[in-house]
Amino acid sequence: MAVSDYQGEEIIDSIVIKQGKKTFNKTYMPRTVFNDPDGKDAYIIGNGESRKGFDLYSLPQDTYGCNALCRDYTPDFLIVIDQHMYKEVIENEYGEKNIVYTNRNNMKKFGGTCHLIPQNPHVGAGTTAMHTAIHDGHKNLICIGFDCNEDAPNNNVYKDTNAYRDSKTIVHQTVWGKQIYTLIANHPSIQWTFVGGNPYQQMLELDNCVQWSYDQLNTHINNTHETA
Image (cartoon, rainbow, N blue to C red; front, side):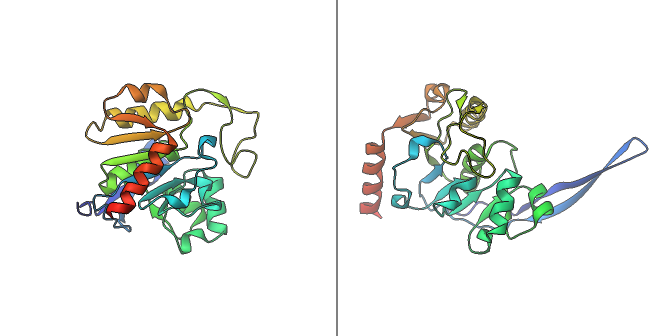
């Protein structure tokens, strides 16, 4: 499997409204990350509490993580959507040594060393991480920490911290579940596996989506190491 042939894209950089007419100012953003999936699985790391206790450092490449994950673990690729979280990432100079994907608005507002989300789907960080892995050419996505089957008090490893809601806030996590469901349904040739937790149940009704226990994940990782 080779690096995808995507080279960059033209995006709307700003909109000027004058005398009731809109003018779209566009800019070309070249591709800046060239990842060869080389038949590897993609591990998508969400921040649901069901992943507590699992050793993220046991995961092989390629890992795609979301937002504040970088406080505890360094994924191969970090996807940051929230502007408050992106500001934290930039202030900590995380992007100087690691790959951070974000949107153009964050780039313009806060600067820093980062990379444009390719063909941004404008969805949540978890779904965007999956989108990016597919864009890189991955065919098998293994997802942990995606507890988005119900709207409930904040189920997040980083609740009550900067850029996150508090423990008591009801979070509409099913919105993310529906986004992921649509992505899975639109990519029938891609295989999804959700590990443990409480993933959006309608996803599991699709032919290309299954659920594993953490024991099954550990067995898969061990087998991957043995055949590498």
